[in-house]
Length: 570
Image (spheres, rainbow, N blue to C red):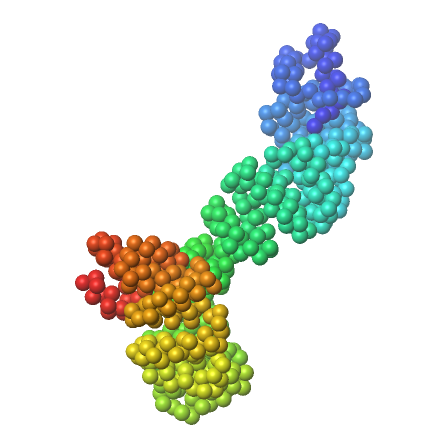
């Protein structure tokens, strides 16, 4: 902040000290020496006659300013101004000191007066620009900033100006401005990330990615660049990369609620239920009133098979969101799984009242009526589902699947066959029927069902794997089993379940090294009790009982009712 007149005056005083000693006290002499030592003199363009008293106040003001006592500095500058009321340097100094103590309105007044009196200091325009911006007059702020900007050497002015221009959607002009700044400051992280953001806004995603990556070369933990890459990758549809950078950003700034919410949404899409649970719990620690996050947590518990925790969360939500049909639907499902049919029916009916178009309620009420042997109600719900647009084969398939989950294989078979009778080209019931026949010990019928799926869809990787695994499990047709599983892996090479099938095939062939290698890989790709059970059997073959028990216990943790695994542990 340079003012020319007073520098000239001060230098004049220092050169002619003896002429002024009758006017100035010894204290002032030392103040001049001190100010000169600290470089507090101001540059001046023209000579101006200044009274000794004004100069004394000005000198004291500079001294206080140097020592960050800006309120005292303002008082001295104002005293000087009384004697020299149109002095642009005094007006400027008052404006600068007032802005430092955040008296912006008063600072603007003095800045305007200083400019009117001929002051040309660019910082006065910055004060006026900041004031206009504070008052919401963005265009006026832009005008003042542009007047202040004689070239791009004033880093902070360019950054502020870029922010203003971006708010006014002057994207191309802002990019040009920042590119000029980047040439002067090629290692500046802020310039790179602002350019990255701007390129993203105009959909120049490759340039945006490049700017963010250049910032990370300079600082691999620079949060704005990490977050920026996450956003760009999401816009480009590169979900895995976006998710990776969002997680990195969250590790650096775990309190960013919006970011953690986005990660939870990604995990829901990816089916990473344990991740959803963990991040949702973090969010609720920060902000316990996030009801949507609590719903996501309740659902994650449900998908993880933690019925107790899920029920606790849904019961809490039923008080927080009493009119939420989804909450009551899942309460119905949890009671249904606990075989508390009366409570389940009550919740499903309440959910249906709140949202008459939510057909899954009708599906559960239909099955409850069948189990209660209430044919009239079952028929009523069946007709209502048809009115909602559900096909008969879909209704029967849903019921058959539910009976299968409940281990009622006879009823599951009945409804799946009904579904097939309605539409023999419908693949889903054929596939599920294969599992039902397996559970019932009817291997030939299971094989027939899986082959029927492959007739209908020659690229159905699940059916290839299911048929191959069936042969492995019963130690039959192992050559064909390998061909079938390999075909499934050609379609989906990173499917942990298919890799488990191949590993289990090698186990049956007593190739334990290869089995171990594949099953460890399968475990990394899928958190499944069967995989842990198989891996436990492999470790047992190697004589590593401790590791075998660890795997079986993990299997039992995921499937607590598996009696075979319990026997192995004993």
